[in-house]
Image (cartoon, rainbow, N blue to C red; front, side, top):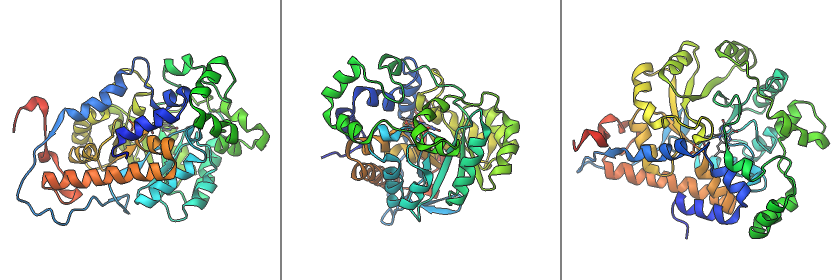
Length: 383
Ligand code: FNR
């Protein structure tokens, strides 16, 4: 019986090849930011209030005016088909079933129109990477608008890929190339190997379609994905707005200065994020940045946070510190990588149930009651 996100992590590690699990799990360089993201949650301790009526407790909230079952968003992750066939569709279904928004990555492996068809009523957002050929991003935005995606999330922390030693060591390149190391890895993980044999190497189908490539050339999109537009700047938000009239979220903010810049640009929300510790190797954990960013920007823009969320109690802490919600990266991936749809759905159900229990034990039966007074920093001593 798998009972927490950590159990699903172990199950995912057992099923996936080393190459796939290292890609899912790994942080940049020596993993400092990855570890810090997780450890930083332990620095905040709850101050529970007792004898409050917690009989009717709800994790529900509104995200951009729309009801959500909890302040959680299934965040964008690329290359999901490396973990499970049609994993983008599966994650969107799990999110819709749980009552949470789902963000489809530009580096996804299922057409955004097919994801929409699988969850006609789901709240779908599109994450955007901007490549040198701006026409690709423009076409992605047009297609997302036509398919009823509500929100655009521009990721700004990835002009180039971070230094990920494990991917270099594993010879991780797309399309997957047969090597002695990969064959040995496949032999040790037969269930994953069978998946790859049946479904083939993941393709960046959305980039390929928006680049106007024929399906038999889709694999070339793997190369395209590395051609990021390194000239992208704050001034380009005006270009985005010409192509996207809906909400814009900027993901990957890590300083007060950039949070204020985002506010100045009038974006609807920011995500405090270090990309799950996969990009710049030594950075503060987003949850550490949260209190000072909240203090600096106030109510606008909306602030989301991600990185290291593995427990419902982590979500309660993030909201208590002023976030409107968290993005979940690896946690739902562990679920989908180990058991497909039931696994992803169970991980989300676990996180929501854990958050509800935390709120009841804390004496906060509604999300709106979670506030700074619910927490003390470890260094502040017993309060
Ligand atoms: C990511 N992330 C990410 N972010 C993004 O904007 N576009 C993307 O394509 C991806 N791809 C991606 C792949 C994988 C395997 C992981 C683990 C992460 C980053 C992601 O959205 C999020 O910021 C972090 O994953 C949050 O940290 P945790 O929850 O994984 O600790």
